[in-house]
Image (tube, rainbow, N blue to C red; front, side, top):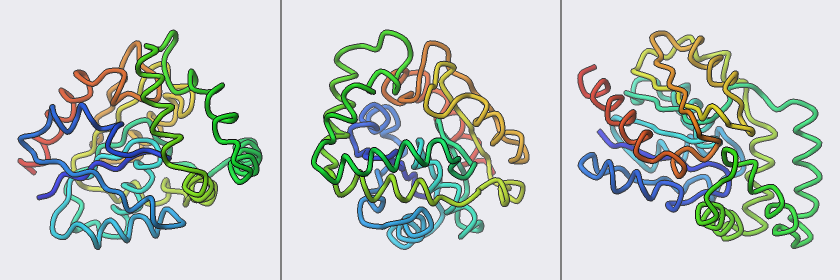
Length: 231
């Protein structure tokens, strides 16, 4: 079984740095298929083609959307789901308008102007300055075309709530109590829809939980992987 880590929007291996180390015995791999495809279903299909055999999928934010879609496309292959700070709902009109405006600015080469003032939204109150810099660096490293494409994919994401009731694999739903981007109510909704799902809320933590609370995240992922291996 392959443990696949699915980054959030504009994310790369940096957001999983502590998990690659902490979960090393499971030999996790970070997917980059989100950088080459234009929709959540396409990202999921490409990931399923890239990693053969049974999979344990751990997705954060947009990566969670890809993981849920992969479970819909290949329920027999997805043996475990860990969904971190994500949403099963389709885009609402308010957020669509925000993203469309951001997309215009990204296309004009003004990504820093959009991202830098909003870095604090990705974290709990008073984020560690070093974490904020790490986050800003990898988001800007993604580049304008990736920011445009991935925001459009999130805008057009499917309503995963329609199929979550059919998930039968061990599922962990985790969220920071201070998540301002995908508030805890969204994780509670996912956990209520997936039979047998375990819900974990992390105190003193925002949206970037893999970076803010790596020890707690790794501990919960170890427990989840133990469940997956026994299933």
